[in-house]
Length: 294
Ligand SMILES: Nc1ncnc2c1ncn2[C@@H]1O[C@H](COP(=O)(O)OP(=O)(O)OP(=O)(O)O)[C@@H](O)[C@H]1O
Image 1: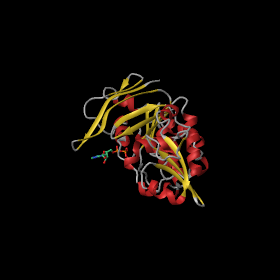
Image 2: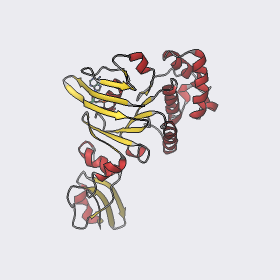
Image 3: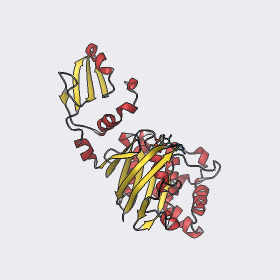
Image 4: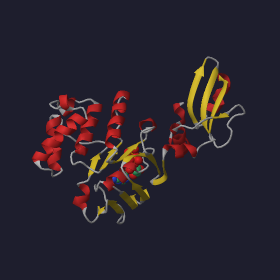
């Protein structure tokens, strides 16, 4: 299975928000990481046929082209938008059946498929609950179930972990891992911990462009030697804290330990340490993060 995406650009009000994106994907979990506004949702909406790109791109799933065989292409795509609409008084059962009909699936097929998905997503015993009464985690699982109704080859999930508590996040990772063997999963997030040790590769988007597309190890390798730990007396730490390159700060009585990303040695006592994905994110997105958080 191969998903080829080429020449995808999108302009809104003369501003290029997706810039000549080119990606080639096989089954697995592909995480699109980027700050708010970096173009993730716009790219996903183009891939799902909800939005047209500026000029004709090449979007091909096993040779089936979005712009030429639209229905055939879309029948292999499952999409969970950032916010998905639902009728609050529908039960999970009713909602999934309704979504199946909207997708043009046959009644018998929907009913059978629903049974599989309700079990797979651990929703079976909740199936009669109304949508308006579901927890954030359960709602996300229903969202994934509706995206999987048509047995898609490509599953596109836009910030699927927003609003999930830590336990639900772990469940979610497990669900993705179980699907990833024979599905191409594209998932967007700006929460680094959601994809750490889960994504087969990470696509980093910044201002509409893909600036990295590689395995986590390789991304970390790219900032090797640029992550530092500084242990200093707390009273000396305040001047360093004004900088926006601090990933972590731990204060223990009179001592403070800082984790810093910096091109050059940031302090005479700084020692190089092993990078984490958080460091990589801060290194590339520090100008869009709020330094006052620390
Ligand atoms: N329909 C639209 N009309 C005008 N501008 C838009 C439209 N949709 C998105 N944009 C702009 O395009 C840019 C990229 O937005 P997009 O939603 O794709 O980013 P994102 O990476 O998904 O961010 P977020 O994580 O906040 O959803 C933003 O500056 C946004 O304001």
